[in-house]
Length: 246
Image (cartoon, rainbow, N blue to C red; front, side, top):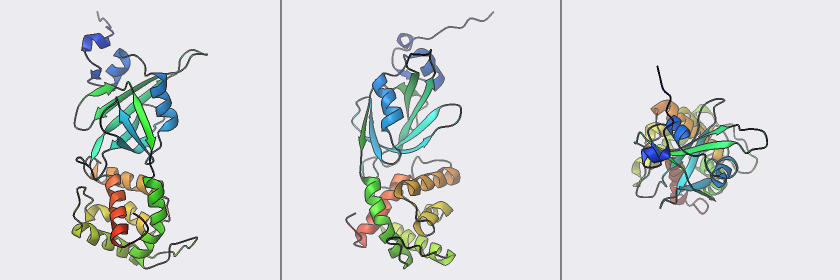
């Protein structure tokens, strides 16, 4: 004979749980302001969030929304801060309630390197201009890396040799550039990072999405080498080559 027991938040003695399913079972649903932040305010690579009134604002990275299962939002440390890698993940799920009642959301934060998840009681979301700044710089960065004109509506139709030229130029800069963050040459030379440099005229946000996917597919992790490090590398390259106001 088995007995199903609903574990309460008080029985855990805190708002931290071993798994998301236990958080969902034991904790109260997220407040309406937290749910609104998750569904309406967070934009990938364009916002920063502060979790549970913490001291750090994390940069929002990629967002995974599978057809079924838990939704995931990756959060990164600023690449020039004391910590430079992945900070952790926001995980959330929606439960459809009775007609006329608001849906119930479970929202948790799982810090990197810890096998726990904590209930999110508050979220502060701020928009930043890092993607706008990078978008303004990208045409001139691509022109500098390839020797072709990417400005305006130009489509230089870069060749494979141009892709390699751009990747080598940025790799050489990364190897000689002293910084707190790390984006090694072998990661620059992955297909998608090379393509956003010299094959595609993709936007800043789309470029960072491609780079993040390449790191996850190629390295299996974005804990240490992150798309935010790639963005900062491009900012630093632009500044070193007197491109715009990086």
